[in-house]
Length: 370
Ligand SMILES: Cc1cc2nc3c(=O)[nH]c(=O)nc-3n(C[C@H](O)[C@H](O)[C@H](O)COP(=O)(O)OP(=O)(O)OC[C@H]3O[C@@H](n4cnc5c(N)ncnc54)[C@H](O)[C@@H]3O)c2cc1C
Ligand code: FES
Image 1: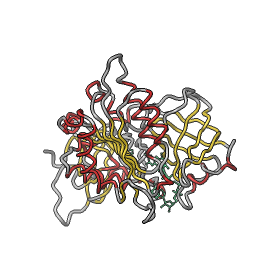
Image 2: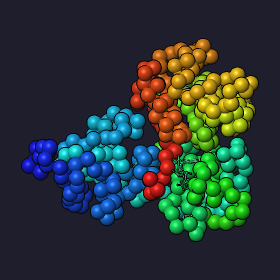
Image 3: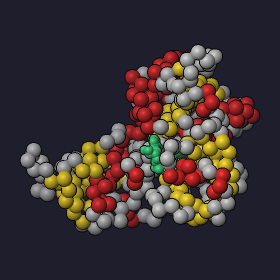
Image 4: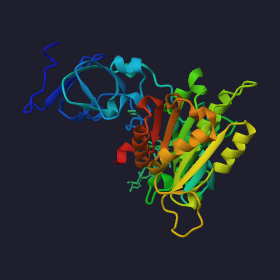
């Protein structure tokens, strides 16, 4: 190993990161986040979500040891991990590194344009489905997200996941949870802004893309959605089922677990049931409510999703024979509030599922306002 990659002792708290395409060296404090450090030093590095969702910031570690803040199996396949792929936004620097920043040399395929807020519909008291008319038609796949910023707001854009729907590629919908005091969510949900313009860039992210291989398309699917994550997950379920619609194809079953606060927060499920019936998709839905008033006549599950997953997995095997086969064949998708996603992943791991089977999209707060 080169002298450059010296091992750190406890008193030596600075690290050097050499970026191969430029021969640039970052000098940073041990424990620093790699993407934050690169941005702070003014390097034009590519990134979007800063939460491990879009994979725009992927790097290759050529020399030295990096510390990943997430299990890399969620985002990279075995070969990519062996090749040293990491996400810079999820990497802590604890020793000297030599890295390659492959995306620096590629042009991004996203499109920036303006759009008009055309329609707003309250799906629940806290979730609004909004529709934008794009100035140019755009293509994207279920599970991807866009960055949106209303014109006139001096803020960082916020990320929102597309909801599958219109055939017209210039119409695009999103399910928006209204956050108290939320600058962008409250703007988008306000009917006074109908007809006004937003800046939008899309598509970002790879959530749901690991289902596109032929083998994965035949896998039983466990989907876990919280809050407005139902919109994105419904799109993934629909396209997953449609991918298998050859004549005589047996469609792999789907279990959808929805986490919501109260019964009034449940939405979009009848639409999904109708679609499942139409395309003969075996779909089993379970809803878990964590704030339903005590004493209401709710007969379903109460508490947090993670508390029920062991039972839900056991029940799945009784719903459908395909869920009886080895759990290794399942694919798992999780989408929505970070605490629900994190606790569900922990619970699934305790049930024997592996990181490689799972993909998630956490609806984190935009990094710029953290
Ligand atoms: C990849 C990705 C996809 C996303 N997809 C969606 C989506 O489809 N639908 C959707 O509604 N949201 C989604 N989000 C979250 C969204 O980007 C914004 O964070 C959210 O709308 C709040 O923005 P705001 O401007 O309204 O609130 P801000 O003005 O940024 O914050 C207002 C208040 O709300 C709190 N807050 C803000 N964001 C969150 C959050 N995510 N969780 C908990 N508290 C928060 C803040 O702490 C603050 O107190 C996604 C995020 C990511 C990273
Ligand atoms: S910026 Fe790192 S994954 Fe999106």
